[in-house]
Image 1 (cartoon, rainbow, N blue to C red):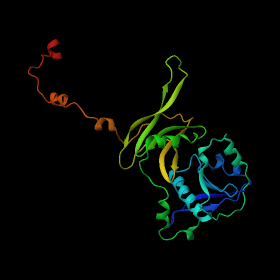
Image 2: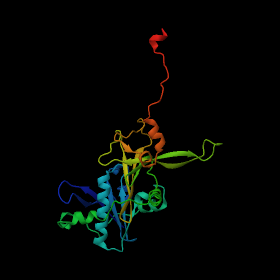
Image 3: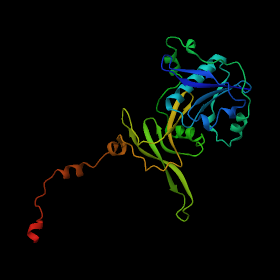
Image 4: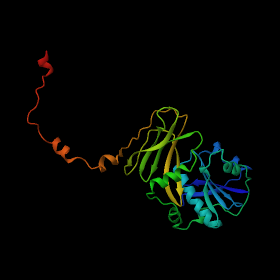
Length: 269
């Protein structure tokens, strides 16, 4: 038996809450393409697990709220419950399919309402998820442990303020079909807003041990829009952090002893 709560954003304090999901008999009646813009929390009292689910079209803010509320649910029903992201599994994964056929019903958890927040509860809850600079190799390992959402392709990956893009590299020069995906560093994001071309991005925040590992931006694979360009500049660290040749710099300011004669187009007539 699984309890399902929908994560809601509200205009007034505390700005995010949960509501009970009552429709449907099985989890698959709720977790489906019809609810792709929603975020859900699933409490499995049999396995003592709290599953977070972010619809592929859900907003980044709603996903973050879901992570915070999952932590609050854990405190409510007992710290022996563990939080797991359902998005890490593909729709064909046996674990995912096993959850989809579980019945929806009552349980120990209660919906989180405004009265459950003290004056500073929202600020304390935000402390459950921190933003820091994780080690790149470890962050990539955590991010790549999640399966790619079905029918989506990743365009950008942001780790610790640095933006990366996926690139296919050939494994062999003798076969065009063999290749492997690798990430390519594009540069460090500037402070403030970074704007992308108008596309229907699906975001995914990967959290490990209450720390944000990275943010992925996906688009649907059938999206036929032109190549994406970042409208805000990014700082290419390789161009400013590498030590240059001082002799070449000084030579650039020197005036040559003689300037070669160049005939103007008028003299050629």
